[in-house]
Length: 293
Length: 266
Image: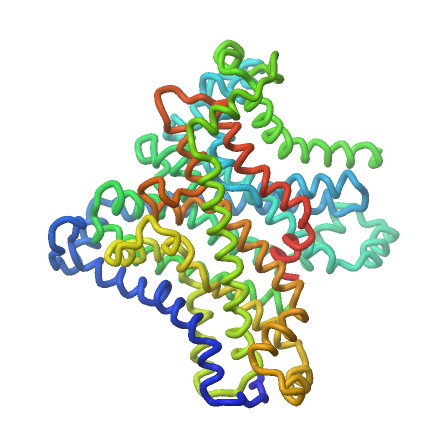
């Protein structure tokens, strides 16, 4: 990174330009991390005075196995969302990477789900997946298939939420893959086709190697997005049935707003941030590879 | 065969995304008694707007929409207005502490709202700002990502442009907002749109920072439609969904190129 050469007209100018941004960033991003770390050492219900408890909040979360369960559940959810969104996003990108009105419309239709509110998407799918009067239950019944408790069966609910999240963000993956596909030289594909390479071989040996950095980028961004999932849980299942869909951010929300346990919520927040930093480390590496490619 | 199969596949895939919207619209036009008699009839027998009327009766749509728009526009405007001078200082000026300031911006990229909401809520509770517009706007008035993107865009603007403006006697504020901003228009439009769309639709932050009606936003209001009373009145919820989604879908249709450009970062 090269140094800028322009001298400011007055020494205080750069800091005046940065002052509002720096002040707000410190107040709303740096200070909160410190506050969370401090609060995690206290037991506080926002009513009676806080009491210093040291590492007890972390111990309590770890001892009951709650922390591990929430973390594993969140990772499982993220894995489903990332794999699903990438596979569908890539497939759609390859299918839609053509000229014509139909394809432009299809691209817009799929990407639009990424733009509308999670609230709208979650409510819409709650209605469609309703086990009594939902349209999907009716379709299954018409095909002679058994009833599935998409949101009420503890073994199914997490997968259902992941499916809804995939529907929501597959358009994002598709759009980024489409941008990546623009870097594949058409002459190369034509030459390979003339040499008799079948479509699958062309994809496997020409397109995919060129898309690898893009794929790493999509994987890590959608990993971070899905790791922070909250809206689908809050609206579709409230963490249930039997805690089967209690993801990390929802667990923090429950601790502070439903159980009024500021210390537990803060301890969860600290662990959550550490996991996110780990995931973002992966993301930064992918970014670098993408810009280097 | 390819001529037929590919468009067919594309249409089928598009249908997987269009059909749920169509179902939402169809449900919203059904009278309540139709929904209880035939919940999965494809189209309403006698379409009516009664569900929409019920939405307006159940929640103050106008008030929520106003709060949402004021919040989302304020955030988007502030992000653009503050990212410009900060990005200019970081990209173009030589001064001690620039590296540290840039490091701060990058570090803040790592802390999402899902991490900061507990401490920020405690902070706002202490100073009595819960249930106010500042609690919804201030934490997002600066976007670390926006500052970063504006800085990146300014790197490719030649210094000569700034030097010439200085020779002409333009002040720094004039240089930033009158000379550099127009050069960055595509970046700034993308930043504004992404920020607006995200905060218009945001459910998480307003849910955490509000406990009563005063500054409730439309996504919260629509989500509340489902929680009201016994038994969900799905036509009403879906009508609320249409009201919530229509503005964003219209904006999307009008600005798709900018949004795509912003998302792919190209």
